[in-house]
Image (cartoon, rainbow, N blue to C red; front, side, top):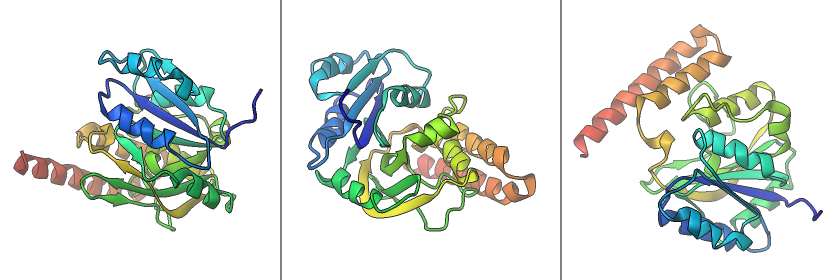
Length: 245
């Protein structure tokens, strides 16, 4: 068996259309590091499945079958991943520059943290990065498109909770934080992200799941203020979308 790769990039998609090519090209173009590239396709019917089959030699693994959602697909990718670190992308995401994985790896070699998080820049101008002081009560504090997880964390702490359709990554991050896993910010922009993801849709279910996750790990008194802010964020987004239609 060949040596285990340093980084596994797991890309999940379903009927992604032309976006898929840009996402994978950003991974295939990386210099000085050869990531393991795993694509989990939810049985696409838009031609993406055939497009991927024609490029199988550039993929470490291709899983194309019906799934129960984004996090079920991520778990399927984890089942075949062999890298020391794991990065999750969607078809809407692109790595920023052809040296980003190499530069990120240089930072990760300097830390014993379980999670190393860089910066995610969204196409609408929003930028997210991990604060040095994590507040897991507020909302999801890292974005998976710019976050590297040690693969052993999933063996030790379990996988994504597929009962959550939108906020399973938040639940997993809080679970790690409660289990005293260290989160390390790295000063590097990792990914450019589209605005069509499930967690960015503005649907009430995402906010409801965020509140449910909070109550799973923290007392009622600690949650109430942050629950109110979640409701206000939902109302604000609803109003903004009404006026921008």
